[in-house]
Image (cartoon, rainbow, N blue to C red; front, top):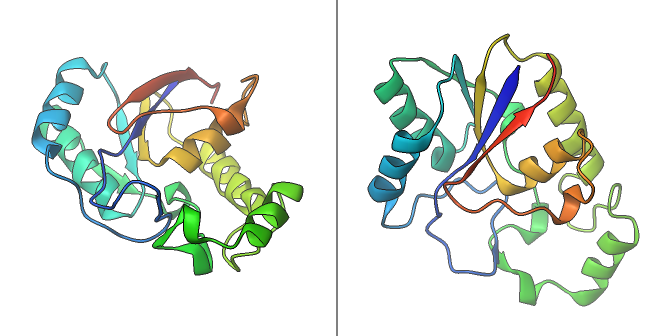
Length: 172
């Protein structure tokens, strides 16, 4: 069955901010973007959302239109960037970024979550998902971790824009 991944709409933070697990609001334009999503999103059977507000608001808009319930799953939250949260990526010490790049999967120079820890959450969410077409409303980092569980040729460099969705054929 299909898994449809929908990234939240644009958050209300300056470009270039590392905001990860921070629960922030949405930038202006949510209604317009949500309207486009509601017009183009395929049929779904289930909606599962990250607990963060920027995802829940979009999941609730889809649920209202489709007459479905929203399940909240903490495993769909964005990566916890620890001390880097709410910092400009340019303000993060170069040595810390180099340490992360040197051991991308396991390094935690920010004292938050490692990429490997994020992958464990994604695998758990995949294992526990319902039968049928499921919509996950989540985050860019989680999208890349999800693609790493597929045959995607370059998952860690994959991009998905704010308010965009991707239909993935991942067996239950």
